[in-house]
Every structure is written in C-alpha cells, then in structure tokens.
Length: 183
Image (cartoon, rainbow, N blue to C red; front, side, top):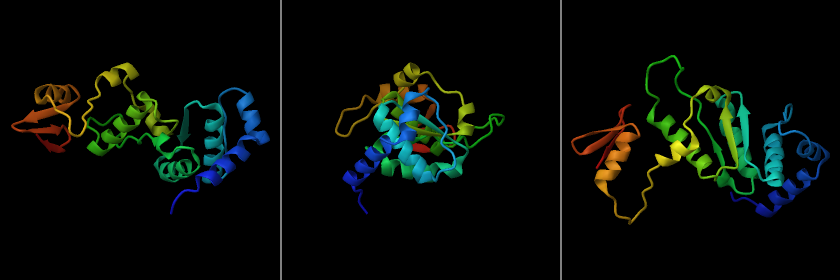
C-alpha cells in the first residue's frame, strides 16, 4: 500500500487551521492531547510540527504505545523518515549489566538523528527519561561514518570503535554484550 501524500497534506492543512491547533500554537510550548485516538493525536502532532517547524518530543507511557504511535506519526508526517523513537531501557538503572546490542543500536540511531537534525518528531517512553545521555557535541565527536566504496583506515577505525566501547580480539571486534563483527 502506498501513501497518498496529497490527501495527507490536505488533511494536515485542514487540521492546522482548526481552532484547537491555533490555540496550541499561540500559547506556551507545552500541550497535552488526551482522550483522542492514537491516529488523531498523531495527525494533530504532525500538523503542529508542520506549522511550527520545530522538533517535538512526544512522551508516551510505555513500550506498548511506541509502535502504533510511530506508525501513525509516519503516516501523517510530511516526511516519514523524520519520525523516530528512542527505545525504552531493557534494564533497570540498578542492574549492573550492559544493555543489549539491539537497544544500544536503537539508542545510537535515535541520538544520531537528533544530532544530525533529521528527526522532527521523537517518541520517548517515560522510562527512557531517566537514562543519562551524552552531550550532543560529545556524541557527534564519537560518530564513525563509513560509506560504501570508500577506503577505510582500519587501525584508526578500530581505535575509534574501542573508544566507543567495543573490544578487539584477534581479527574480530565485538560489543561487550557478545555481538561479534569480523574485520
């Protein structure tokens, strides 16, 4: 199934001229949208973001809300690729264990989109608000960019990976929780 972008743009435009949205834009920057379906909230947020052109963080109660809400926001947003979600931590802050590689990958992806300013709408589960995050400039300095058909300085790349928490052993690089990547 493909998106009907012109219809979605018309629906967003109609929503952005509604009294509710006009009041939301004219007041302070904090609004609560309750009592509406996931799709209605997503449409309102997409129209709001389209109108104000500022990044918006959407706090949801838990993991169960993320997938449906992200799908609805991607449907109504002018550019579905600008919608992202931050994962809920898989561990309690009191557990002395490393997060899974999948969770770390999703965290890095979401933070990367924020630093690169490619995310307009970020969905964050309430539990993730307790996680300590790196400063944006510190995070950006640690990003390793690799491109297809580009020469790689293996020694510098390995050093950067180690500085980012990976470990090396023989001809492999692995994450502390066990995921292995052959070099």
